[in-house]
Structures are given as C-alpha cells and as structure tokens.
Image (cartoon, rainbow, N blue to C red; front, side):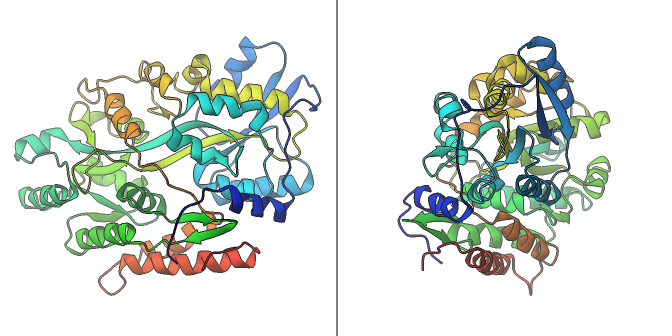
Length: 430
C-alpha cells in the first residue's frame, strides 16, 4: 500500500485511543507517596535508582528489573489489565505507538510536554509526540555509524567508504586481502538493522491519512536497501550472523569481521568484549547513498507512565531526572563501560566524559555520534503493530538467499502487518 500525503499521527492515534479508551492525566490528581515503582531492563538502572534515592528526599524509587522484548510488553499489557502497573516504565521508540495506542500509557502532555519540546530535536520529539499528545520522555537514541579496524584498512590501503557503492568496494578489497576477513555483517535475527537502513535511505513504512494508517514496507527506498544487502550476502562479501551474540563476537575476536554497521551504543560492547584489540578500531559516519550525511536510528527508548499508575506526579519528576538532568544521565554511564548516546543533545558532553577513548586510540566517538544524530532523516513513523511486523521480518531474515529475496520479506511483513491491524479494528487507507 503506497503512502500518499502524510497528515501526521493525530487522526490514527486518536482512532486507536478511541478504540482502546485512552485517557490522560497531568499528575495533579495523583496520590502522594513515599515510594514509586520503576520498571526497567536497561543496564545501570540500579545505579540510577540508588543515586536518585541518595539525592532526593520527597519520595523514593523502588526498581523492579524486567525482561526485554516481547515478554516485557506482554507483562506490561497484563499489568495494565490487572491494575497492577508500576509508576514508571521503559518503552522502546519502536513500540511506543502500539503501547500508547492500545491504552497502556498515561497522557503526559501537561507534565512533560514542555520539557520534550524544549530539550529534544524534532526527529526525536516525533517519536514520543503522537496524536498531539506526549506519551513519554526520550532517554537514549541509536544513531548509526560504521565501525572498522583501522589497522587492517591502513595495512591494505582500503579507503573508509563514504557511500554504499564505496562500501561494497571496501568489502571486495577486504575479502581479496584476507579470504577469511569480511568488512560487514548481515544481522539474520534482528529486523531493527534493516529498519534503520531503510529509514536512512528515506523509507516510510508507516504514515497516516486522516484517521487511517498507511502501510508501505516495500517502498522503493526500502527495496533498494534490501536488494543491496541481498547482493552483499549473495557475493559472500558480508556474513549472515546473529546480532551481537557469541557467533558474531567470535568472528570479531578471530579478526574475521573487520568492519560492521552498528549504533553509537555499540562502542561500549566492542570495548568490553575485545579489550585486546584496543587501539585498532575506529568509527566513521555511516555510508550514504549520495555521499551526503544521513543516518537512521538503531534502538532508542523513552520512559513513560503506565495507564492507571497511582503516583503520576512523582513518576513524571523521576522521568525528567533520569532523561534530562545531568546528574541523572551521569548515573547511567558512571561505570565507564556504556557508550549510550543521550536523546537530549545538550547532555552529550556530560556522557562522553565517562567513556574512555583509549580503546579507539584517542578518537572521540561521540563527535562521530553527534554528526550521525544530527543527520537522522526526519519523518520516520513507527507503526501500531511492530511486534507483528518484526516477527514476520525475523522469520524471513534467516532464509535470505537467491530464491528468497529480502525485498520479498518486506512484502510478506506488510501483508502480516495489515492483517493484524485490520483484526484490531484499525482503519487502514487503501
């Protein structure tokens, strides 16, 4: 289904909220308490909670660690139904339209809307401002970059690619220089990477027309991305591997993966997993289709107040502290092992002070991250059934080969998504 004129998310989200009986609160009627409950699966959530409790007297926070992925969102949905929600919950950007649209979140426009408008750039505001309302506050983002073994590229006189055409050339030279080495990885278990690359290319998987959703996973930019990576896999220029799991890390340790595309937050994992390769790695802007700076987002999350939370006012205060206060952000990265990129650009300098530069031979990876963040292509919209969308894509990724083109996976995922949306009673534009 082809996207025509985008009208914003107002109509579609309002339609969702009418179906799910969404409501809102400004926190002014919430009961006061000595303690609020905080659900999070993010590393260092315990440190953040402890730091808040040490420095604040009005109320305390109790952390409850939760699983990630589909299991977590099922847990949150069940808690809303049962009336046993926490006061603060983590929600990934890609799942926020679905969670908000099914009535699982409080409307935070009155309590944090002004903060979101003041602190965050438009391309990030639009991820939490849906239907004219604010549903959460962004914490971190995932601007995309290229990680590469500078020593290998220098030794074999391989230029750092600025375009995707040059990236293929670099991959060919890498394989020729060392038949065991590859300059890239195709994540075969994670649809988020394909999504981010489609985003960068100008894909628009979801949009709205009036009060109806528009769906177009197999638009021309996305098919271009799919065909490009299909070719790299077909020609054995990149290896299909599971995202950031043992098989991938073993390939890095064995120097069989000497470059790969990942988000800004991946720098911390690289440093922690292969410390013996200190000084050998560098980062560069993500290659683009026309040589002009452009990035998509791989990951990123916000914190929100679940529907029915008893202490919304305190929850909003805690959320603002952990997302926009310098002391709150410092707590997230105080271990020195995280390369989290804050959604609030004013806090980049705060975060980078905690991340050592030795592993990257003194390079300021946050400078590259900032360039990537500033060049995130605006206008991307997440859909109202991303669980179904991603499940369908992941089922296809492991089967990518000549007779099962990746572009076909996009079409299959679109069909599955549309069926799910219609089953939920959502309006879909023809």
